[in-house]
Image 1 (cartoon, rainbow, N blue to C red):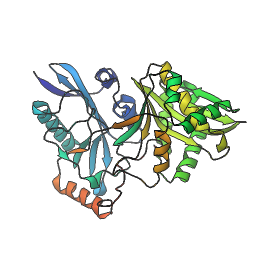
Image 2: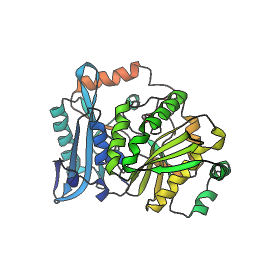
Image 3: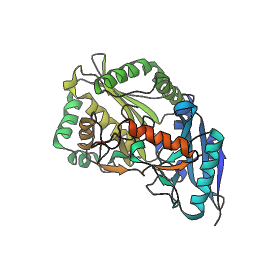
Image 4: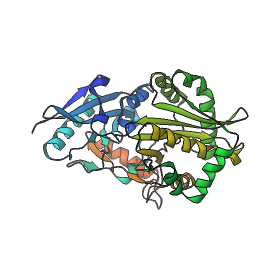
Length: 354
């Protein structure tokens, strides 16, 4: 049995969904292209077992202080092989060479599906908090049952809210393709309003614009909107990838909040996911265990009441190539007071916010 890892430059050679149909969207080609729109360097690889692809990953370069950087493989590598023995050694060697080439202090990963790579360093909890890191826990709903079963399994107030919203005079739309760009400014304005109200940060505007521009040729990116008498009340951007429908961005206004527009949009997105043959609807990050956030209690409860279960991702594991700078990075996180504390900050920014 022979393993090898080779860099990939073309989309046709990079296919995480061929390994797992539930591969996280953060390891899809389009996600790397979004990161490039922010001026970030992205490198992609495939893992071969006896010359047959058995895993894929893309690493994104992020800045540190004093001109340093690190590389992060968000929810990856996507691999069904245990990362142990020869493959573990090969992967560590490849990541070390990549870090040296990019002058990065360390490379971070959280493999999918969940596992602990042999020989990798467990990342200190102090470093889990960061604007660029992905969630440790998502809330997912199995949407394979029929509509009646899905509604019956929800919290009674959520079920009522969906039915109530659908009886209102809401204008519900599903927008794809070239039409999306004409809705970008209204989408972003509502995102800003929601972020200000919820006290969370957004990506720069150019990031969201790159997503909308990429959607011109990608009908798997759908904008769900709910309006009332011409006023946009809520908007959800949903990505359909493999067997999963992802809800990474959503926003709403407080005006006419009694119409419960977000409930109608989630239900419409669930039904569209079923129509497209998806198995899961991923609501994005939630609070769980020690990873909490002072502004996330409400949104976590909201998601859980749709029914479903927790999707746990791997812990963080690091390959350290510049020990001094890595030590200073960890020390800085501790000095900032993130660790130790009774309720450590989450290692996610919050998908609904960006």
